[in-house]
Image (cartoon, rainbow, N blue to C red; front, side, top):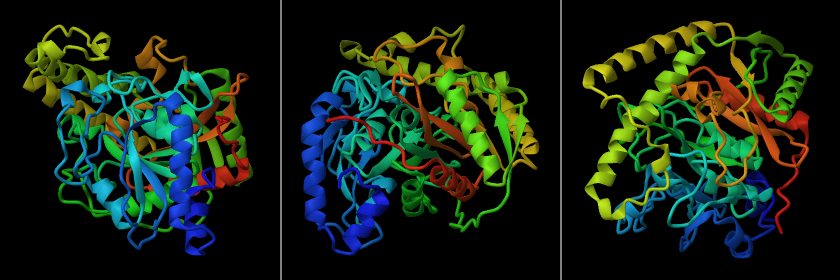
Length: 438
């Protein structure tokens, strides 16, 4: 039952074919059996009796960047030792209110500042498809736990691909919503202005249908989130769409998966046409300013204030800027971002969805960071800059048996259209194998 979809687990609980205690025990036994090799969990939580709700009794996990009351939120950093959250993050509160059982908090890189999940507390998280390879980052622990059958689904966060890249690496589905659609209140680092323009909380699960179930629980207005907007949930009946095919450079297996998805979409009655993103390189550079150049200075300040703890696993990623970013430079980059976003919205006025790779490569070997990394992840980062929703789902394999995914990008607030389209692609693709971890 641990490899059942979230939907199947939920339905079996409702029909009383299994009990919540049986399902919980099965997942706890699975965690005990495989997590010593995966290192997906930072800590296990003591589950209480589940509340009544749409997820009653379903075992889920949450990334260790979201507060859970009474527990530390370490975000992969020894600088955070001693922290204890006073309250649940909005994501944790909503999952519990829906009846979900929170099994544990999952691993992430220090300060979420890497595409590989590695730190000085839990170590690096392995990929359940091949333990020598990375689970991706920064929501790598969440992706590995879900792919390995330790969890039916959960919540990650994404400021530059941190939900989508691990989903791609581990053969699961993940949604980066529009900022404000799913509350990120109670997340560390805080998702607020100006860098918070990039970051969001979002659901992860083994199928798109499961991701939608979680999205419908998590979505909604939250005054504690400065980006939150009261957008109601919507039904999106099937319709023929105009879909743009992105020509992003990628590993042959990923390109083949994207091409297969394009043919599948055409077979479903959609129009698929080539699409070139205007100002692509400029958009990547502006994202890099907000995600790296601006936050690197904050990381240096943390390290300078505690030199005896200067052990950050991402030190090698800190670049020496020519000068500290000024207020004028931040304001200028914000204005450039707004113009680039407006241009992208105009480009997509008649194109509902874009199809392309999540990133340029499959899961790489642990601690063998490929280069040039900014370009390697360029398929993911512009959509954080623009604030567009993006969905990743598995759609193929490398010759070595590693999973590869495809990415669907939508216009702001059109998550339901992405999820509907992704579910149709998933159905046409057929069942995706489970990670062969015993």
